[in-house]
Image 1 (tube, rainbow, N blue to C red):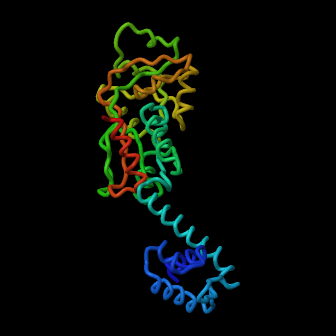
Image 2 (cartoon, one colour):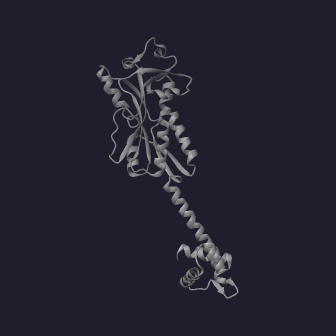
Image 3 (cartoon, rainbow, N blue to C red):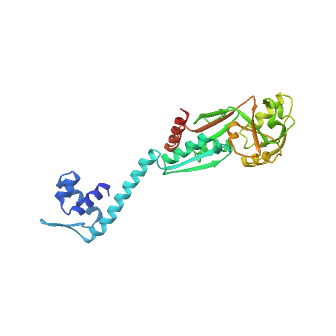
Length: 296
C-alpha cells in the first residue's frame, strides 16, 4: 500500500465525486479510478459504492477513512521530523564540560543562545574529566567536549578542536593572607612555602603535572596539603584559609566575600578548547556555528 493510494482515497471520500477529486489532485479521472480499484484489490474490500449518479462510502470505507487519515498524518509528521533532524532542529546535543566551564560567561551565553534558537533539541550537560570527554566523543555518547588544557591536547584524527580562549592565572587566598596585599607582582616562586590546594590529578587537565615541572625548574617542590575532588570544594577550602590555590583568570569573577584573587606570573597559560567529530551531527554543527559567531 502506497501513501499516494491513501491520499487518493481520502480525497475521493471527502469529495464523493471522482471528477472533483481528480481535479483537486491534479490528475485525470481514469488513472484515479484505476488507483482506487488497485487499493480495493489490495485490501480485498470495496471502499466505494459507485453508480452513474453518485459515489458513497461502503461500511468498510467509512471505517477505513479515519485510519487512512491518521496514517497519512503520521507519515507527514515523520517526514517533518526527518527534515528537522537533518537541519539539527530536533534531537539531542550532549556536551562534556570541565568543572570550571560553567563559570565562563561566553560559553554559558552561547549555550543560552543555542537553547533559544533550537528549543526542540534536548541539551545534556556532563561534568567530566578531559580523558573521559575525549573517549565519550570518540564513541558517540558525547557530541562536544569543552576542556581546559595547559599543554598540547592530543586528539584522535577523526576529531577537530577549536581554540576558545587563552588566559593567565590568578592566586586565590583569604583576604587576611599576607600575599593578598603584597607590595609587588606575584610569581610562581612566591608559593614555595605556602600550603597549596589543588584539584585531584584526574580533574586537573594536566595542570598539576605542569605546575610541578616548572616548580622543580625553580628548585622547589610545592607543599600540596589538600587535593579537592570538585571545584566547589577547592574554593571552599581556600576560603576557609586552609591554603592557597591557582585558578584560571576568568574564575576571579567568582563573588566569594572571604577570597582575594591576584594575578600571578606563570610560565604557562590556561587554554579553553572545544572538540567534536569532524563529521559531527547537525546539532553539533549548529552549536559550532554559534561558537564561531561568538569569536567574531
